[in-house]
Amino acid sequence: YIQTQFHATNKEDSVDLFSYSGGEFRRFSNNKFTVRRGRIQAFYKQDIAEASLSFDVNETGFHAKDAWLKLDDPWFGGLHLQTGLFALPFGQEIGLSSQDREAPERSRVVQTLFPGIRDLGASISFQLPEDKKLHPLKVDLGIFQGNSGNVESDRSKDIVGRISVNRPLKSEVFNFNAGVSLFMGKVFHQYDIDG
Image 1 (spheres, rainbow, N blue to C red):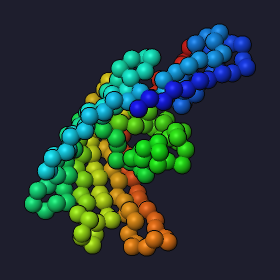
Image 2: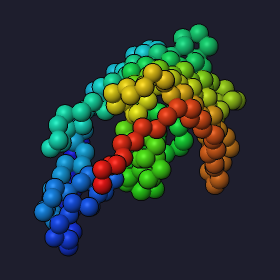
Image 3: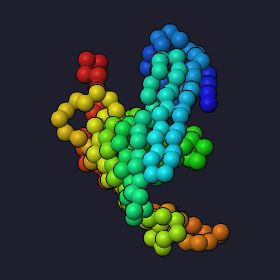
Image 4: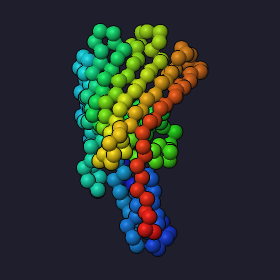
């Protein structure tokens, strides 16, 4: 799919304008067209294996968004191993696509802590099949490169986890989701110390 965007401002010099959802303006430019998202995806699923490979294509280049392999436990049915480049198991918002979120863009907190939303690493998940009583309970724990897929900047890795309960009530009138997330790692930011 493709999502285009047009930005405009009434400022003559836009050097100080920055948008989390649309990037920066070039200096002395007060309007621009961008390809906000240009996504190409291939997905594979058979028996106990799933894989996804997707790319974001826009005017700045060709970037990998997802490149992961997931294996399900064939005996017990509750364990899932995943490795590659994939969305971090943190909070409710990161796992939702733009059509399921309250707003098209992710919150400022998520964009600041996890700039790429995805990261290189491995995770293990536990969730029983749908016919089991404890199916609503899900536990995720992973170890990741850090800095949301950017080049590693230190020798430590990030540990990210989540315990969630998703729609435990069999009701058409009332449902709820609840969860607790864990982040043990570093957030790497570059600050302009010359300005």
